[in-house]
Image (tube, rainbow, N blue to C red; front, side, top):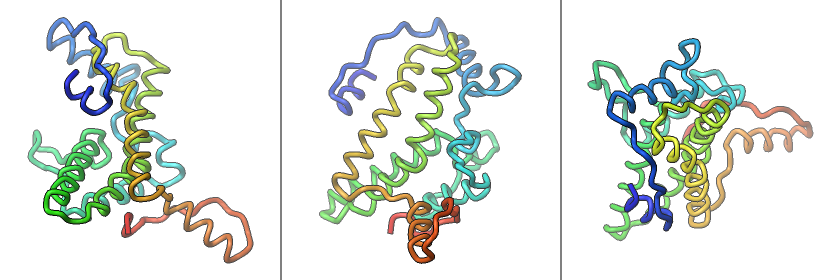
Length: 209
């Protein structure tokens, strides 16, 4: 963990006391992310469970927008994991998708091809979905700490929002600033009609042009 973190951030990873055994690790994880007080997770790893991420959208529309990223690159949810399909808005699915985008970026560079499309996809996905979800999870655990949660996981959750923001800023420096399609659509409509309204939420296509 220290080697990987130092390679990415240039900072050493703080040493934390590990969980006493796998059962303790599992119990802390379940309490934080699956079944906490009243049977609900303290910090859901599903983006659609966080109202502030939905921002007024219906959850099916929100899910369709996330899935549009995956479909654009020919990806679909795995269905062989314990007989259940992966949720597209789960944090693990989003992180795996980012790994695919980075792989495609590296492959383009090695073949002397323009990696800008993959970098725009990373920027947009970080700004619109992954970054806000990481922040929501961190805020939830900060507001209701789970003492049983493994210290390394807790540290990582606290670090990842700033890391995601830094990565997005670096991508913006390379391929331009992120522009929220919904905000842009609303601004154009207001300018055309000479009025001010709340942004209209739609299912977006060609998310990174």
